[in-house]
Amino acid sequence: MPLATDMCIENQSMKVSTITVCRNSFTSIVSTMESIFCQTFPLVERIVIDGASTDGTANYLESQRERINVLVSEPDGGIYDAMNKGIRASSGDYLIFMNAGDRFATDDVIERVMNHQNVISRRPKLISGRVQLEYSAKLTNLFRPSRPGKEGEGLPHQGTFIEGDLQRNHLFDTRFGFVSDYELWRRLKHKGLFDVLYLEEVIAVFSLGGRSNSIKSDPQRYLERAYVDYQYSGRFRSQDWMRFLLLILARKFMHTVLGERLFFSALRFLKTV
Image (cartoon, rainbow, N blue to C red; front, side, top):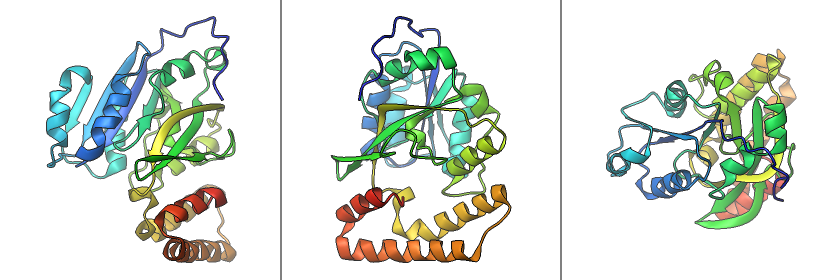
């Protein structure tokens, strides 16, 4: 569903920083960057943090240097370390991560979000829309969240604009390999800063099957999330351990029986990813 059309005030004084993290992503970085370059919003700061790619990614980015405001290509300590580098380099009123493999859903989506009447009037700390899921280069009819506001504390970073100063004062915890974004949302909620404006707009397209959705990463991802929950709730029950174990086993079983494509579709339906 499109955003409200009564945008009598244009929010053209706002700057949005897009941060793209990549490493050896030559097959996917072009579509990601083109979706950023094509944005119609006039004040977009384009930041790219490349982890010293060796597959042609760095050469492509260098060829686009005139269209990129900040380009860094050097080794890093992992994806969240690279994302923190992007945050520190940013100067936008709002930030959004569009990492290699992801892309904006439309050329005018930033403009539409920033000119939304509730964004102009409220200036929320977080603006969260929807992310359409893609598998094998084909768009699915699956979205995250299934309905606005149903994502709870696990906002998709590809679909979430975060106030610049808030993000710069709250970097990602690099101790985690998979759930630092989830930890950030929990931390902001703990501090009373989880002020979210939920929109029905589809912000981005997210390709399934990457590192964060890998079956092999399930144990670490679930254990990290369990630790974050314990950190902010102060308790972790024995039945929660059983739930995580069953989720891991169920995912492996479903992946084997259904095959990869149906497996991811089932996961979105069951809301277990």
